[in-house]
Image (cartoon, rainbow, N blue to C red; front, side, top):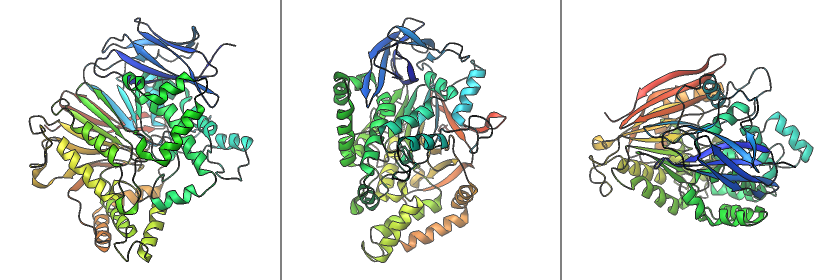
Length: 558
């Protein structure tokens, strides 16, 4: 029988330095040799590898011409399978950036939508973007798409997936209507990435991805107590191992450059054996048992723009007296990458699924809660600590603010990367070498906003901003809208300070203010970077209207 294309192609890595290479990910329905053949003669081939009965290939493409878009086709065992006959979509292309960069980003995409009729959570921003590009192939498109978490919802499945799960196992047994093993995770990616418009979009716009909690489970790694409870269940080990396995296959591999893939021992091992399931299971189990063994964070350079995608879920240190958002090795790596080569980039983009600067009430509430949990009121085993832990788990109090030392460490790092503060600069980083912008790109909180720090002593020369954009496709109930609006208000700020004083929480080393938003809806932010200039655009997906621009602003230091 001939091989068929199950999911993909998904254009992943593009070389933003030389502009001559890329990678394309595919899932096929049987073992085969996958080939990418470009119209200009560039291309590449790779043999599939097998995980749990599924077949994948990450095809390296070489010989590309920088800045030139070239159409490509996918062949399996020399038989063309993409573009699909009669699809009506424009050709999928590979284009490596040559002059400037357009970066689109967002998070929180619940993939399921009705086959026909009204979508209860509104139009999908990625689907809407794809539809606009298909209708107008000449429209300016993103050079790269950053997906900042919750690419799939393992704990919030669609009606169709729940019916599929019920046919596999008894939904009365844990984890019930949530996914439980690797095969069930593949169903989520199938549902998400086979949407025709989104499938085409991912085939022609390269992407970087990092997970957030729903890729595994809501509030993943909130605290040591949370983790101990999960590990006491009979189903959690299989869930988290399968979640990390599927993330490695469907998301993480494509984040890596060909050079990184060539030196990756796990990738080499899996490709060298007929079935890579056991090596990948072992790797995932070890990553869960000791997160410091694996670094999911990654870096990509595009000309004079540097992108750091930072893992803020699996890399956590949860021991109560030494809680940290990033384990020491990951923190050291992020710092080294942010400060590498002063003067060699004009824009630093730090992708972290969780916002650095939150609405002030929420920031102070999380810092207060962290203080209670570590025993600032009555000791670590006291009544307030027990109350704090219950509140932490029930109220999602686990952003950067809930790890106060990590918040301050990130603040210092961003200031240094931006060329300051005076007396605290990294070697070689000063006004002359400072970038124009340092942008923290985040999602998670189901609204969009722009926030800017208020630095003591005037601050660094580069402009530092928090850009938050979510969801791509999910519900935004009235309670969320009301809560976040209040969190940004003066009354909310005063309430937050009262909580902080009760917890004996020191004031943060910086203040901040919201300079844009809050905006609610299914939405996508785009940064257009040209030289040292930066323009931000926020587009919302609206039924019957497509993508509607609701905000545009200049972000460069000027």
